Length: 447
Image 1 (cartoon, rainbow, N blue to C red):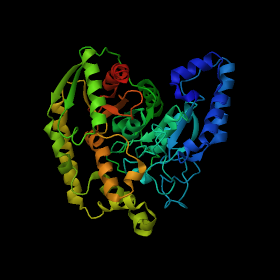
Image 2: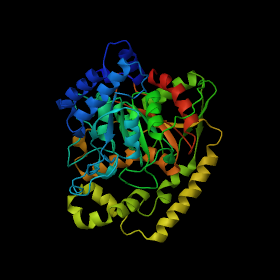
Image 3: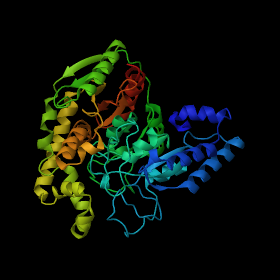
Image 4: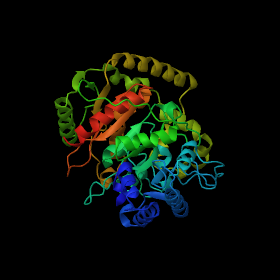
């Protein structure tokens, strides 16, 4: 598929006359109908995508300079409003609810950039797990393994598979506890979780308003920055820097517990490659990470805030929810206001201490998730599912709790199951972290 190229590579082919935007979209729509793409999309916008492609082709023929996304296929997670449609958020229980009056802000900005939105992508119901299994719409299969059906990661499952299969140059998703970075890591992509306030959440179906972040995944760091510039409506002012001399902190508390050998080996190779390239690798304890379960108790921010979002829906239609999602929402239904306020106070205190502890480092570096994608069949029982879900979310959630920013970069060797390396920093440090990710990406990809 042509869209397994980066945005700049596609732009070069189009500029040479080797490919038109319309031909590209036709390829994508054909591939989206194939068995490998089963359960990736909940809705396909074939006519609208072709129209955007034709417009880009006509503008190019007229000598108009196109933006980087014009006429290129982009997918949108099922939790974003599209005017005239009910936003289902991967559920069945929202059927019959009023349609959206307007596109979500992020979607509207993609349209303004001329992106060809090819469809809405499947997701964990209400974005509430890191696994990516959906009992209502089916589960997209991770393309990294052609022999064993494996989870794609969640909650932005269809977004990741759409990019991995070449059905989109980027997938607009969301990240509340890792929902961009987890599927990016498991599917061999780059995911960028920005500081929460960078992109408006207007028109995005809430999971947890304290944590929800509008962001995207793509095939490269630069492609993620291109998407970020579009949905934030202003590009990050990234000053490129050499890797030589950068100080990278490896937090040894929590982040390496129960790590699988394949992940440990890929991460250690990448860390060694970064060191050889001139980065200063410093092990730190960062003992504050051991406090996360206490900061997030009782109930947890996501269950408490999701219980508020779904209060009426949950009371009337609980039986129609994914049972595993319902079980997590139920954890928040009895938490008192005083306890919730205390959680917020503990979070602020904890985040301040973490920010002070990592001051002076260019980034934290650790595995994005401690396991490779497990087979879908292995998670049939609840005990196995919730154990995997906890492991998948553990490392990434720490950065959401911090309201930090983070990139997940592929760091596995060819032929291995995908492994992600996460570079993270504090809130508002997105541009500086992007410079670290741009410098680190070619090193960790070739280790």
